[in-house]
Length: 319
Image (cartoon, rainbow, N blue to C red; front, top):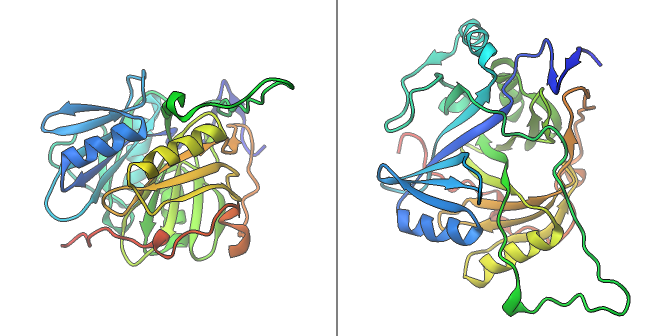
């Protein structure tokens, strides 16, 4: 181990510990309410917009506001430990970032700056929402002589437990890796040049907190939500597909991260993912990051993704 560790926190490593929340703008809030409610999230009204929560959890994971045009990623907010906020400001000053005011309607807490590709990013003191151990995963099989059948009429609803990770489009994956390592203290888990990369938190996190996907402009590719079984992945995806959302991708299993997945296309051309059993990187483990061939970077099994899966449908920032 390259650094000492203590109490679930890597000493000597200045880095964000969690994604606190993300913020998007959509053309129709009622359309967003319908989509995210069916997806299994608690959707609450706030200041003319919507806040997204996991069922029974008081942490706000997302802010959805109304705007003209298509869907837009407004900003990402990351959590840090209270005793590190001043060190983060000094680090960002040393990186010569452009500090900005909070976007309209956003909380002014913490530090706001213009990050790679001009994406607004916030660093704030917040509770660690990334888990300190691998998420619970179950696979239930019926005993011999007993039926494991679940009638469709009695199928349980699927409720995501937390945000697992967030994937953004970027104009240069390798340059973005370097940028987010220097500014946020994220660490490379794996990549497949030049198309994709996965970054984790130094203080223990899923295989990736932040994924980077190559495009000609910034934007949101997907938000990913942790569930507890392959059945929940499949059942959640089937529920959304039966409601008319799509085209979708799943069920399958990724190579990098190894999680089971189902991507549901939202009304604006991006995705929300049901994810289960993703690899976990403890705070005291130095993950052997590698550059993987394309055939070893996307999925181990499952249907082929449809051609538009990696398409960036977000309007250019200047539009």
